Image 1 (cartoon, rainbow, N blue to C red):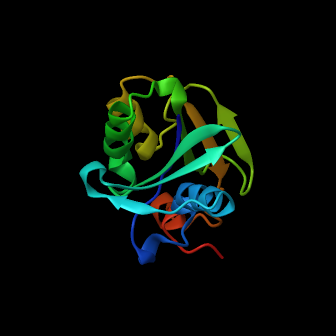
Image 2 (cartoon, helix red, strand yellow):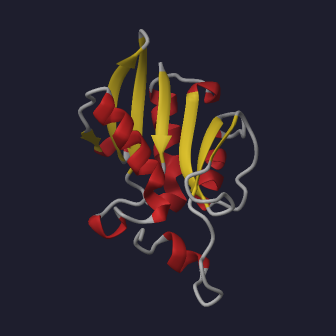
Length: 153
């Protein structure tokens, strides 16, 4: 089994923000593979199990808010007895142009609080991360938090 965790923030007010591209990415995978989301309160996450190429894939949307995402990812990894190498984390990246994607098999958090949390709860940087570019604030007057939590134009 593999796990793909899309990071984001729960709630309608965050649904269409750049910070939630991870949520939207795993939702798109679930839709295309006919996955059914279910709430797993003991893991503080929504999960959907799907099959792809003969493999089972656990899709995860942590409901802990971005900065505590590792709590859900780590507990699900341990429950399903997965290795960090079986985990893929999808998140936003302000250092990449909008729409650009970067995949790395390991590495640091790059200043991303959600990734910092996942690294802390997995106890390693040895997991795949897929970073989706959301770009930097368009104007010097817009702060980073306002940018990633603002609505996508």
